[in-house]
Length: 245
Image (cartoon, rainbow, N blue to C red):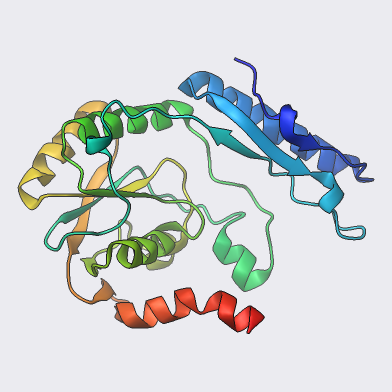
């Protein structure tokens, strides 16, 4: 299946051939992933004209993909919307911090080895999520991407309006919070459905563990200072006003 990304590209003329090689490999990786997962790409965008002086843009094209919901009533909302739900992490957390948001924000660094890609594991996870959603098992979901589990927890709390109390998935709290291992999703389910979801995950070959429970007015992570939701929301919503007055 061809990757339909070039229809929206605006090519400039970056002087660094290494940037073009990186971009080529990024597109090749997208094509390989879409072909294996059966994902149709409807368009994309990248503009090398956005280069600032001699500093090239990041070789990261943005693509649009298409998905179809057979029953919109079965859609799974993002975030923690109900108190008392079990919070389950699907996928494996590894010590993968290269190219992470933490490295970028704290150290201004985007190098290092990126998280490993396992397309077969991604496919197993996607099939599990689709089946669980179709059967009404999921009350919420949120992907783990930039910022890792820490960012996903904050966004899920603020989007849904519920706090949460969780333990971390690995012994090292730093890795547990900020690693950006691919193929992970944070989901919620009714407490009496958690064992069934874990059993489905085991049958599907997807690592899964219950991290905690939704509810309350704070984000509470074991061995980490409690973060009230009102403070998180103030920080979250104050970024643009602080930048632009």
